[in-house]
Amino acid sequence: MSESVDYIIVDDAIILPPSEDENGRLQNASGVFDRDGRPVDIAVSLTHGRPRHAPVEYSAPEAPEFIPGTHVFGGIFFGHFGHFITESTGRLWALDDPAFGTRSALYIPKAGPVNDAAIKAQTALLAALGISAEIRVAKGPTRVERLVVPRQEFGLGPDLISGSGRFVAFARSAAEKVAPAGAEKLYISRRDLPFDRGTILGETLIEALLEREGYRIWLPHRCSKEEQVAQYRAARQIISVDASPLHLLAYVAQPHQQIAIIKRRSMNAVDDIVQHLESFGGSQVTVIDRLVANHVHARLPRIGRSSWGEVDLGQVGQELKALGLIEDTSGWRNLTEDEIAAQIAVIEAGMNAKYVRKPVPEPAPAD
Image (cartoon, rainbow, N blue to C red; front, side):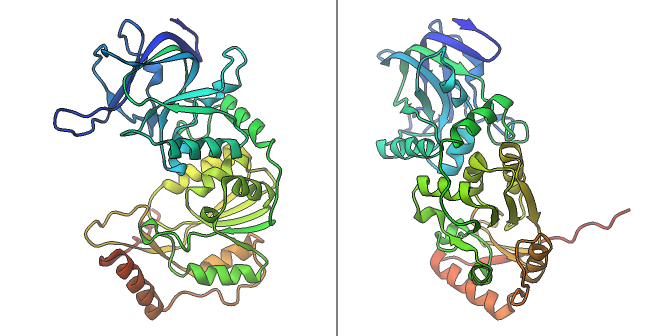
């Protein structure tokens, strides 16, 4: 085993992915080991400063799958595209190092077995970003002839989301391979996602008002990843609620782009998005925080992905005009109580659950 500051090369590496206990319950534990059973600490993947998986106790596997050749350790494989592009890419900078001579990335699954369709989808996602890679995911205990374990240089959390200089250069170099195509003014909508994915109340009103201003109303989940990346490269003015597509945008964002993010929930997910956009693209990013209340599932009243945000749309319009993103604020108004009640009733019917309104606390007065 040889090592440097940036990576470790492990010959006859052993990968132990999450496995089931004697009761059939999946254990949130995994690890990479050398041939003598010593843990490779650099292989631990971090999210917000904490390991994604607990350490697993080493036990020499009886009949591990053997994978010949040289492979870059990719970390933990996520099936959700937003988590994949933020938590499964931070080691891929090593693919561009000619010293290793491989375009193969080998992952540990986040949980149980990963199907071929998920691997194909994430391979296509990387290709859309200009990154060519062959992806493999360990199905069980695995021995690898030669495993390059790079440092994780990008991920979720304030210490990782900006990316190292090397990782940003890797991502930017890949993005330059993608030709821009699409509208210059773009609104990224969540309108027709499932109810449990959440957005802001009155999004159809926002769409109508922005369409009047010449914005393309963009439903990225209806388009291929290639179309999405090309459109993000072409746009000059972008408005969106805070959402994971903005992490995809960040990979190809550019300094001349002006981006406004309408905050849709009382949580700090938007901070990672802004840091990612500014670090990778140097874009002009403004967060419009006019959130009035969070509407959340009554039985699971945690603010998160499934929350629905109630915002002061009148003030949103004023801020967009001040930023030069729209010209006309007529029509930008708050929803009436009846309009809010009607939309919540549709959400409750779709979710077969009651929702409760949690007002956003007033900011504390300055001393």
